[in-house]
Length: 173
Image 1 (tube, helix red, strand yellow):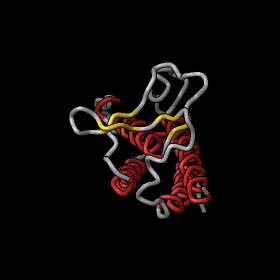
Image 2: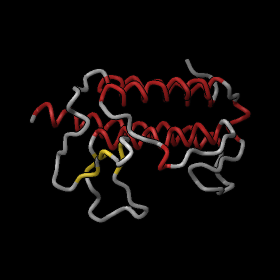
Image 3: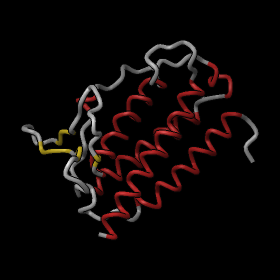
C-alpha cells in the first residue's frame, strides 16, 4: 500500500497506464489515421518524409476532433518535454517531436516514454516533490515537481480516454 506522497503518485500513474494499455494492446493498424469527423486534427506526410501534426498556437473554436495519430503525437510531445524538464535538459522543440509513421511504432514510442518516465520517477525522492517546477506552468513559482507529476497522471488519463473512445467508436463503426 502506498505510504508516501510519491508512492501515491507512482501508484496513480501505474493505474492510469494499466487502463491505457488495455486500449494500446487492441489498436489495429488502420486505427491511428481514422478521421471520426469532418473537422479533425491529424498528422500528414511532410516534405522531408516525416509526419507533421496539425497544430495552432491558439486553440480553434470549434476544437477539431483529434485522430489517434494526433493524440499519440501530442502525448509524445508533452511527455518528452516534461521528461526533459525533470532531467534538467533543454526541452525538445514541438517541431522536433514527430509522429513515428504507423500505429505499431506509435505504441512502441509511448511504451518507451513510459519506461523513461518510470526511470524519472525512480530517481525522485519525496523531498523532490516540493521543488519548484517550471513546466507546464512556464515559471509560476507556486507550482512544484509534485504538481508536474500529478499533471502527467491527469493528462495521460485524459489522452488515454480519448484514444480509447476513438478506438471503440471505430470498432463499433
